[in-house]
Length: 220
Image (tube, rainbow, N blue to C red):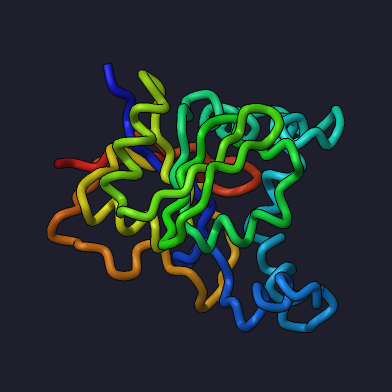
C-alpha cells in the first residue's frame, strides 16, 4: 500500500515559513556572515525555528549530544521523521542547506532535489542520498514514491515547492507548527494557493509552550 504525501513546516503567525531574504542568502554563500542583512535574517529565523533546537530528538538526530526537552513538541518532530520514507525539496532549499547541514545530513533517506541542472547523486554518510530531478514535480514524486515504499513522502520545502504540490493536488495532509512571531513579509506558504481546488478538513490541534501544532487533511 502506497504511503501518503505530506508536508510539515513551522510558520509565523502571519503566514511565512522564512523571513524576508534581503540579501542574506547571498551573504551566507559568499561567507559574509557578519553582514547586517544576514544577522537580521538569522535572528528572525531563530525566532521561528528555535523551538526545535532544544528538543531531544532534534539534538539526537543532528548528533548535538544528549539532553534536550521531551514532550509534545519533541513527539511532533519524531513523528515526522519516523513516517518519512523519502523527501522532495526545491533547489533553493538545497543550496541553503548544502553548506549548513552536517556531513551526516539529518534526512537518512533519499532526498529528491527539484532543479534544472544535471548532476550525479550525492551520497552522504548515514543513508542520505541527494538525487537531482530536472524533469518536473511529477517525475520527482514518482521517484520519491518508489524510494519510500509503504512509508510517506514528505515535501520538505521551501514554500514555493510546497505550493506546487498542493496546487497540483498531490498533497494528502499537512501539519503546521504555528509560532507566535510576526514577520510582515517573507516566504508566504499559501501565497498563490488555488483556493478553488484545495479544500481542508481539520484533524488535530495541540497547543504547547512553543506554539500550536495543527494538522489538516486535504480533500480531493
